[in-house]
Image 1 (cartoon, rainbow, N blue to C red):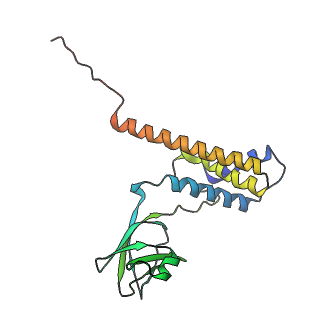
Image 2 (tube, rainbow, N blue to C red; image 1 turned 90 degrees about the vertical axis):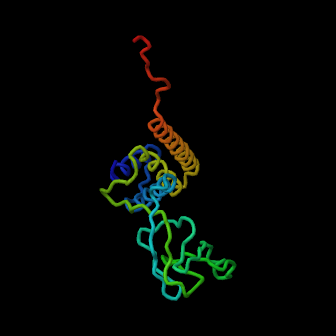
Image 3 (cartoon, rainbow, N blue to C red; image 1 turned 60 degrees about the horizontal axis):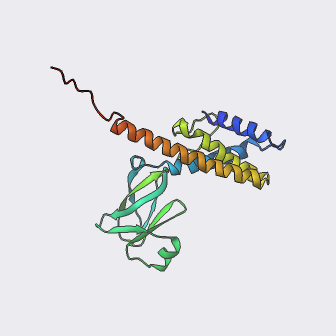
Length: 199
């Protein structure tokens, strides 16, 4: 489904319970937030990217696709740098540390020239006419996630909680079904092969 189709379904479902109208730009924000919720739960090891970040006085710019760091970073000095909170970074609680703040990476050793790090990329922002870059099987939970936010905005706590639960249930069931489907394809479903015992 495209973003427009997803939003049409959301709008129809909202109009089943209320005549309140949510502006298109706000509905797109809710759809994007729900999409990110689904995206983060579907991360796999194959989604991880690697980058080398050049540092000047311990500060470097993250790639535009950077979403979440994965593991420790390796400095060109051979040391492993651990991600810490901004607060712990300021307190200097760990000797080799880095933190992420406002699209920049800050390293505790200001003399290190670069860090090699692995990260999960963030999803592309959905715009009118685009299509979420995840399997279409997972588009329905995006609808429920957006509806959770829409009803929260409309101050209908009961329907917001209902769709939040529906989002979690649907996504969990689909992830479990996808996992079973992939495992079955890898292992095969045939327990015994046919053998002709008559020669």
